[in-house]
Image (cartoon, rainbow, N blue to C red; front, side, top):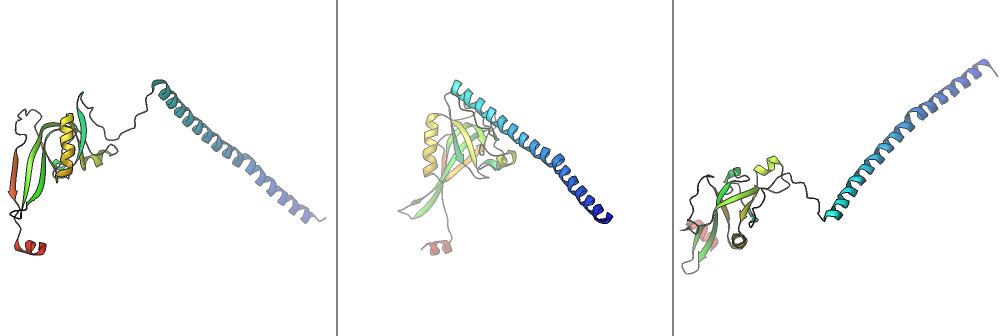
Length: 205
């Protein structure tokens, strides 16, 4: 065998040994480390879940959900009810937890005898505390663009509002000064006729 062939064989063997050494030294430990970390993470999750389950079995309590948009605690004997409100009727985003508001319901109705349409608004509740605005999952920015407001009411007021949500067009909130103690206007109502131009009336016919 010539010196050249021996030299080529030695070079080839050297390269193969180097590649094998690289694989043994770098790839296997890395894979092992990754696997060990994954196992530790899974064990940690299992431990937390087991602890929560054990606590639930011992106390009978179900862990509470995390809410990014907090709500004020409901006072004893009171109830919480949510109403849909648009931006302007909801005081343009200025309503927040612990705000004090009056609630106005409005509706549109038609007089069949005169064939005229009317719009009315009635003050249904006064001096009501706001528990929160928006949904429980809303972040800080989304809470400012709320389309629901949760109010603290008595059970009787809650029943009245739940019925009003079915037969009224919607609600307006009027923000009050927290030191304003004046009440007594609940039930105040305003009604006016809806005037339409001739073009609208002809299209309706």
